[in-house]
Length: 480
Image (cartoon, rainbow, N blue to C red; front, top):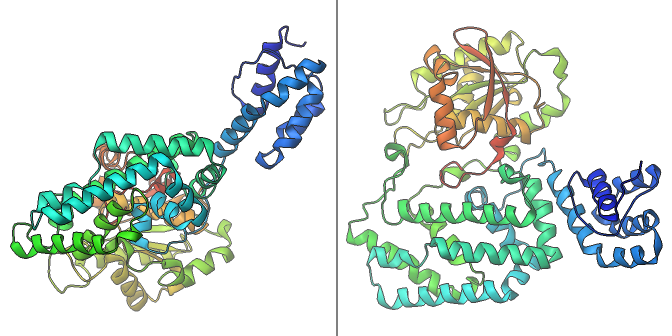
């Protein structure tokens, strides 16, 4: 039974094709065979889809309408195709890990030559860039060593953020290059997976907002000394009240001013300023040991493809690290005991891999990563081979132990729908399955990185990893 009105007919076609309702006064449909062919059309097949739609339409008037509605078709096809993009099951290529992990959108825009040129040529974004450079010129001339004055020009207000976000969205609408980047590499990266179901322009705006909040936080914490969420482990290195530190920040402003031609995109001055503040404070933890799949995890990464997964009850055994407050101590006693528990389960054939997780955390600015030292312990004390141990040397909390383990499982191609095991001491294990831990995850991450399934012992919980864990979090710049 065909729809009665032309508007109903087009709505039915678009509902069949795209799962969305679109109103139009002219178009109907006929053949199920032709509909099936159109359903298989991709963005590259837009011209084919238009020709097929002409076959579905009736009359000269409808064919004229097809030509005028081609833009609507392209938009609908693009939107639906973008929504179905699966983040890549592979490590994200990074040139500068600290920047890329925190501000992936911005480094992608800056390093893609054709996109870089389009942003630079856009009238609105160019105006914003000139205004921000003028503000920095003024800072360099007048602020001296005044810390608040030197940092203010690099921060973004809500109004400035909104203006730039709207300009990026407008550029997405008119530029195939920007659309291709947003709905291609940006979505495929999974770095903004929480926004994966949004339209391309909304994805850009949300990702831009995340980057701005991250840059502002880095400036506040590592520029002027605002207290971070966990000051005992994440605070800045120097005293912002000292003349020497104030002069250091003034020097950074002058260095950027000296490199003015390189500050050619609207966001680059703030990106450079915030990231160099992290560097000057020796807070580069997020980039250490990267790329791990080519270094510390290389042998395990290669072995993943050869594992007969059906032979194991679990995909991996996650072992959260444990820091210590003793300077010079490589591995805490609690970490050693957790290694012992995990080694027993590994030798019992529970899983083909151990994921040891823990960064450079306790005491503050320690030279030892919990995960690296746990791997050494597992190899020397328990004879576990390097190709069976995956390290996460970045996590700073139990929440990110679980999140980073999920990320590694996804990126390394470990079956994401196979049950995993987290093995630790009874007290941390109880915490991981508690409502308080769920609340902490929601408060600090915005999602649960794991779905807890069952408790198998006082030391062990089974769980499934959650894809939302891929989301970058620049509000925790030492492990975003």
